[in-house]
Image (cartoon, rainbow, N blue to C red; front, side, top):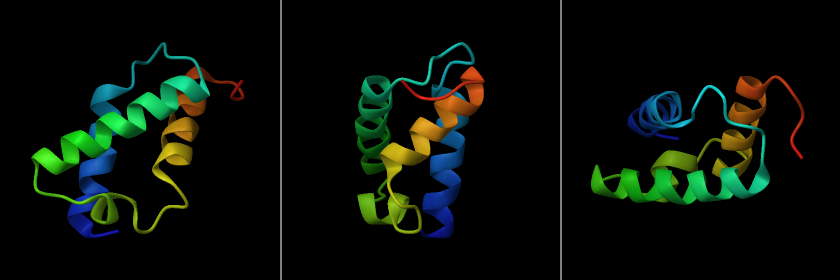
Amino acid sequence: MSARGLQFLNKWIAKNIPADAKADSVLASELADKVLVAAEKEGLTAKDVGEEVDSIFETILKALKDRAGGSPE
């Protein structure tokens, strides 16, 4: 992941995942799509954003889980 891509992903997650969101795979999928659209608007590719993570979906699902304080459904 490029340094810019990593920074973008971290900031996007912090701003766009509600503190009260549940660890839900459907929500994680929707958010993964949204982060890629937002990245493209900033001139980043999916590769820039997700190169060093197993998957953007899994990264977002983990963030949801961490915020919800439970395991994904």
